[in-house]
View 1 (cartoon, helix red, strand yellow):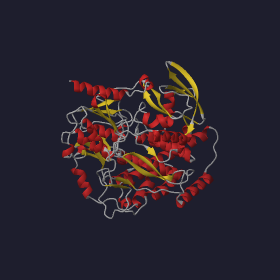
View 2: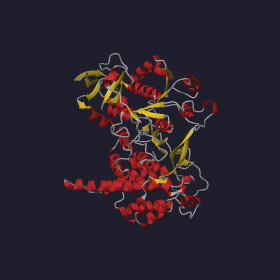
View 3: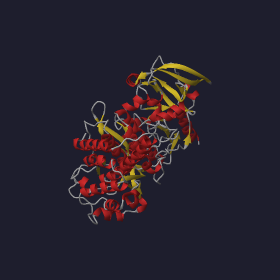
View 4: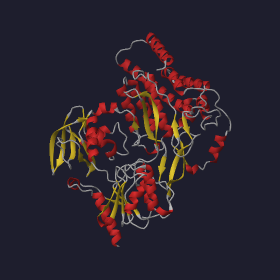
Length: 586
């Protein structure tokens, strides 16, 4: 990708060939293991120092230096260093070459001192930067000069453009059409870019099951052994799956499809009574039936299959898999015919079921959807209003609420992703004159990458007199389940602040906060720019209640049953109707 960097790498390799001697037996393995171990340690230190400097050194904010070019030139030098001391010296010399780092006491330093420490949450672990034993005294002291990013004049295109509030965060990265998956230097650029973006701009590192730093050497080792796009993609996918963040996504997931199977059974699944259950079928020749509880795929227990899928797909917990895994990646195979074992009417039965390509399944879904009439709202028995929040829009909300005006209660179905403005506008109808409610919103700090400043953030829209509180005195039920996530969870929290509103159904997925994307250095298989998305802003409830990974717990817990699914019932909606009837009967 970068000719100079590649030339240096080639020359180093040639030198190693001429200066090395051949060992045999166990001594070869021992020598290779020692060399590889040192190489991984060197590259791990490079990733840490480069990422820290990338997001903090003034030279990168003024455009004097290109952070990618600096890394590409450093990798060949660092990976061949024989000792920690040699690595530290290389990195120290490089850091000094970037130019002035000590700007003294700047406005940013003063702002940091004036912050309320109780409102600051430092997620990035930079303790290593102060460890003289790890870095050596010179390098450690040099890095500490920029722990707080100095106030920089003449900022051009910084690695991150961040105004510190309102979700405004933009990563400035380059994409390389000549990215070479067979080149270790290029692969490490991709790995180091993603790892550091997460380290400094993911607000929930402390909620992970594993330490983010502990994962780095493992994935560097994997990149050393990778040699093509498929292995490169799977390494990034498996590493980011560890975030347990359902916002994690890649523009191109072709390699995951190649790994897990290109054929897909044309059904929709939900977790019911502890297993994936068929709730929709999109092909007439499918042998599965509504209500089938999936127990095995090609002879493998289904929960073992799910576990294998979760290696590459980020889910908040092992159990919460509906939105991220079930419908796109569970019933898949490299063979078109799949052996699926189900529990049907109390008996296990095994069927040979035909799969289709994803494109064919999506076409089947679109064809069925095109024939369905879109219903935003309707009035149910006992004069209870029902609104599907996924189809309620800013354009039809007034008409919809006029229709609901004389009803005796309201059901808001949040099991699908709501429209942004319509969902916020609904708060006008639920509140007693208060359209906005407080949440705790964590903004990445502009001058201390890796730290978040939490503040009261009011969300919603101001009330308008003619709309004020039509439902502030009537019972309102918000239906939630694992299909309620991200903005849907945020909206549910807003609605729940009204005394007359209750949440009913199942626990939500647990993925809250604002998602942003960062450009990857490689491209899609179609030659287009490729991005990696993840949560960059933290969100908690009014009293710092955790939502990420935990989700929202309903006030009234109701679960669908297999018998209900087979009978075509919506048991959560039926329970919501029953609750409103009970309230009106009091």
